[in-house]
Structure formats: C-alpha cells, structure tokens
Image (cartoon, rainbow, N blue to C red):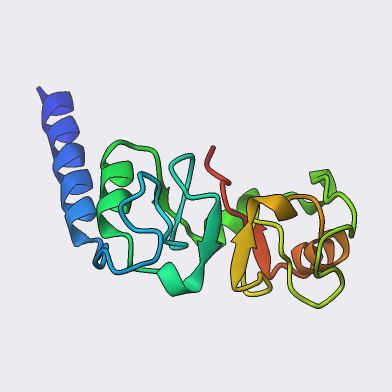
Length: 145
C-alpha cells in the first residue's frame, strides 16, 4: 500500500510540474509544425533549427512533445555534469562561422552558443565548441538521451 501512495504522489507531482511550465503561445515562426522550437527544452522532439527568437513561441508543439515524453526542460547544471568534453568528436572548422567565439553546433547549448543553431553545422565549428566546452560554458543539448 505504501508503494501505491508513493507512486500516486510521484504522478501527481509530475503532472503538476508539467502544469507549472509556461509554454508561452504559438506566435513563433516555427509554431504548429510538429516539433518543438523552444530552446528551453531538449530531446528527440526538438526542431532541427533553433533560435532564441522562438523561445516561448511554440506552445502547442512543445506541450504535446513534453506530455508525450519526447522533450524535457534543458538544465545547464545537469548538462555540464553529463558533458565529457574529452569524449566528444567536435569535428572540424568547415562551417560558415568558425573561430568567431560562438559554438554553432546544435548539439550544444549554453552561454557560448550562437543565436541560431542549424543541423547543417553539426561537427563544423570544432575550435569554438571545444574551447567553450573546456571552459564549462556549454553542455550537450540532449544530455538525457
């Protein structure tokens, strides 16, 4: 019986946590396309292009993905703890904006990432991303997968 009470308390806590998230509205450029474009989240349900301009502007997509367990809130401390810089293949500097002080690789999030992250830049900004990772100012976006 104690287990059932504990399990019920956890499910109520999880449900109220989901209700506590302000998903915003659907005013973003990428709203209502079936993927979450809000950089506050991470996971398989995320859009391939992410920008800060769409933060809190893709409520329906993000809420559905969150409720389906496809995304979760991105947490800087958890991402840093899970990011092992020495184990990451950063690739090369063949992207459009290498060595400009911002990591353009969408596999990362944090203070040193670019405003817009495109899938096409995966492993194409090695110097910037490696440096920021080593400094502890960015972590993996999908650290929980």
